[in-house]
Image 1: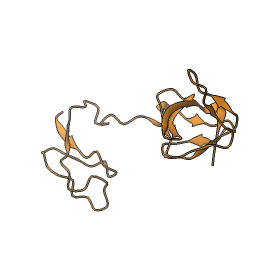
Image 2: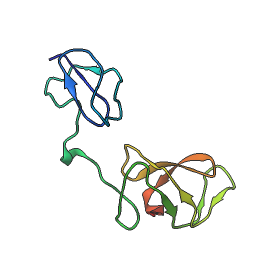
Image 3: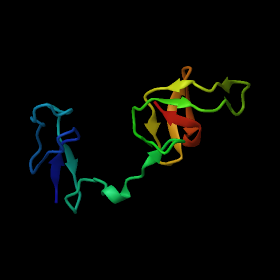
Image 4: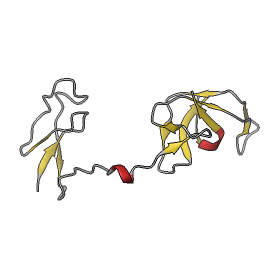
Length: 119
């Protein structure tokens, strides 16, 4: 079942190649991508398959959130210590629900969620 889908916020599809013309779509006026899905789901994940990432207080985290360290952490392989209260903004979730990607002091690192809380 060959068709084309919009990778933007509208989730539109078309049997023919073209551009997304949906108003306020994040990919408006961009080319739709070819999709060869057989189930018509376009790679969408069921709600039961979504992994929920939670901080040390049990609050759900999502991409772009700001978190703060709740404990001093020594970086492995260096003498650097990340102090309690250090903020990391614009976090990214990883495939592991126990870890997040972020930047602290200009350094990209992976943090365990047990050491952060959402602001």
